[in-house]
Image 1: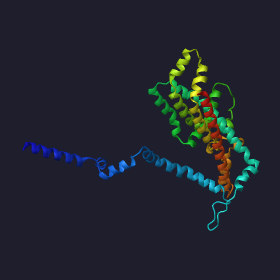
Image 2 (image 1 turned 60 degrees about the horizontal axis):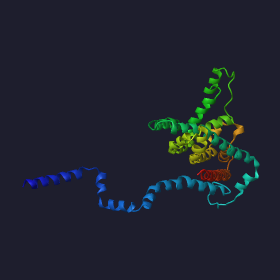
Image 3 (image 1 turned 90 degrees about the vertical axis):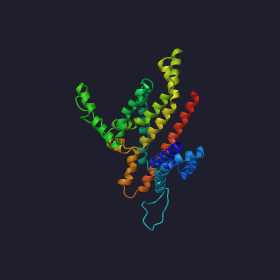
Image 4 (image 1 turned 180 degrees about the vertical axis):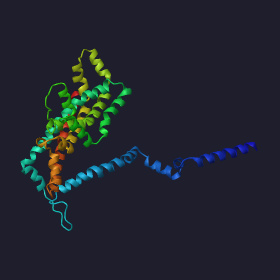
Length: 327
């Protein structure tokens, strides 16, 4: 009889526990939920498709979709198309770019500026990434990265205005130079290629820093230590070991910075001048100031996009050949 009472107490306690569990705990043991879970996790391929479904839909709808729409608009004679009017397609919008050399100057200026700014960003951020990955203890690396990431939590416009205050006639740079007695009058840094370059390098530094840090952090320190034991100097170790083994990070960072630099609009408008007009400003003119010229602006945007992709592809192939040669 006591054993029977104990059994009833155990059954009652178990039922109370099952009924007191949260809703998700009950769903886990639900029969149809188990069948559904087994179905979606049946194979690694199915698991990958489920995990990648949302990113793929996001890329198709938020990235590829607008690009395809831009391509479609670039082939129209007029946009928006009046209701009841048939769509007329043409390539005159592309011919206009190649037939009028006035558009070539901002186009090639954009590519040249993007290349120069990419190289400058690489030169400035590589020592920072190297010091962070090779000379800072692992427990402090995340803290240092967080400190470097904090300014990038602010929007592009706010950071651009910060550069304007920094380089202005009464900004920090001119005040320091004047305080040391190096200048008598403020240096006009603003609205030049220099101020625009400082702004773009500052805005894109993060996209170069993180790939470089990732590549340097994976590099075993034993490689350089062995080379030092064999008599290799600091420059030889860097040129023969560190640089070749971080080419992947360099190529990733350079591609990101170059692509972003070709598409900047607000920063060149706020920091640049008449002599630094980039192609994004020309494209914007067709959408804002040139009346019904949207197809031409879309065609110019497609030309810039395809040109940047071709250049980055050629650069990627070059870096791949260099990595194979070093291997």
